[in-house]
Length: 173
Image (cartoon, rainbow, N blue to C red; front, side, top):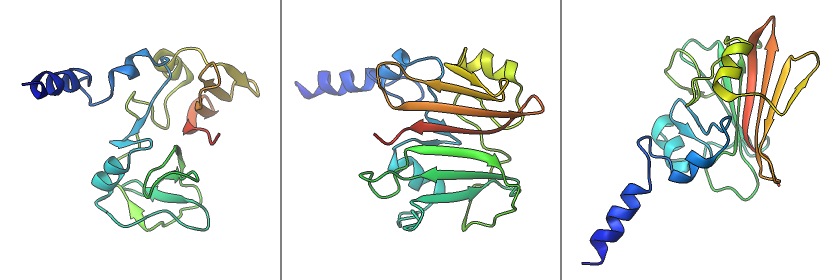
C-alpha cells in the first residue's frame, strides 16, 4: 500500500515535458534539450540517434552530427567522468566547412526546447531567454551564466543581427 503513494509522488514530481519540477525554478535562460536530445541524458541520446554503441570520439571527446540537409552542425561535448553517450555541452553552428560526420539527425534544423535556432534575431533571443549576463564585442556575443557558481552557461553568437551559432550546457568543473 505504501508503494502507491510513492508512485503517485514520483509521477507528480515530473512536469508535462518530462523534466523534474526543479527545472521550474531554474533561470529563464536555462535550456537543456535540442531536438529531443537532453544534456547529460544517455537514454535520450541513444533513443534519438538510434544507437547503443559508444559514439564519443576518443581523441576529441566529442561527437559531430549534421541535420537533414547537412547545412547545420551539432557538436556534442563529452566531459571526463560522464558515462558513455552522456554529453554535457551542445554547440550548434552552420556547417561552413561542409563536414560529413558519421551521424545525421533527420530534422530540418537544430532547435532547443525553448525554440532557439540558428537565424533568429537578438530580439527573439532576448524575448525567450531574458537579458544576458554579458554582451561582448558590440553585442555580437550574448553570454548567460547561472549565479552562485553553478555550471550552466549559454553563449549566443550573432552575425549581421542573426544568430550564427550557439553553445550551451554545463561547464567542466
